[in-house]
Length: 484
Image (cartoon, rainbow, N blue to C red; front, top):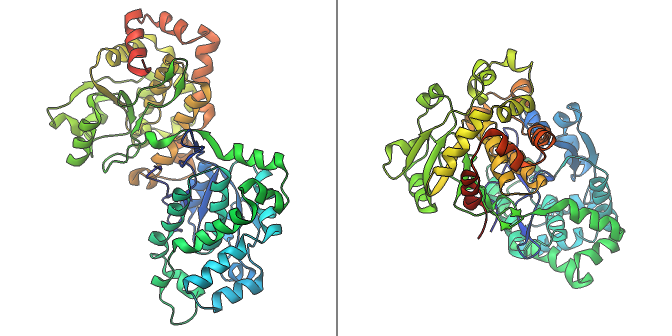
């Protein structure tokens, strides 16, 4: 099982994808989001693409291509934008020329893949760059298939991702490279673009070459020249708590996620009980049927009435659901506007998201009313605003604190929002440096209200008492969240 949305929606690339979201360590953990992006060529990136990558956290670009490829399609956009750029070719110039000018049958390609993983110094150089880089690392070749596929395979092997998921990550490349007509210029005359396809046998040759000779990925990387400490650091960077199998891919919403599956004091938070989302006005009938089958019964709409009037919840026309209007807004938010579509940028520049979030948790009556509504609701409960980031993010933080989920997981739940948010067309249309700053889900934004509660009330229980939430309501919320 893997996260169903991994491709980053960029204008200038076809095959930029996350390595996060793969189950690993026998399903107990998952590869972390926001650590590695794999991609095809970057020479056509637009200004909006650059802003997306910056906001996503990309700091480092590793170019796996030959010098000839670079001269014909340089990474000018990322270099001029100030990203750390490294040329780290996975093949020698001669090896590249032989590959391009040779035949493209499976046997030849498979042999080439097996030879690439034996380029020990080049492999070592790649991982040394990674280990010395902070932020998200993007690595790429021309199509994002062969050399990029090899390095993706090695990274996923370090995380102990299942072989089937590693192969599937490789195979999906064909879906995107078939759309990129620019690739035709890099291959011999008469070769059809359809011939540039991913074959399981090719990556299997590289995979087998590593394990048949060395037994484990760790022994292989030691043979490349990495220390045990470096390999462990790489593993720790790749692997984190089980993550976004919580995301529900829907036709009419981009940021619909379950709050289940987080480790907490009494086990794990329950699935199918509390869910967060962006605007659900565009849900299809298939979406509604799926959500009803998933257990959804109550919708808590955190938006202004005028927001809801512009895009009414699709569930209102379906008698199977109960819909509650529960505007979760302070006077400051009313003055500024809400989320991405109505906010007053001139005034918004004067206040940070973190300050807005603190204002929300300071409004005791507002928080109490909202939590009571959720506590009293029946069945699976969805709470949402327009983008599913700010108001929804604060409520999600409070609910996870009530379940005594760890601080790091609470922050991560908030941070994942940006990945889904930028898939939304109306958000992408507004992307510019000013809008991007408002759209980012940076850890410091959610950290401020979290630490405010701890600093002023010692713990979530102290905060809930201060706002006047009854013990029965607190227990009802905890029972909705925590495994029996």
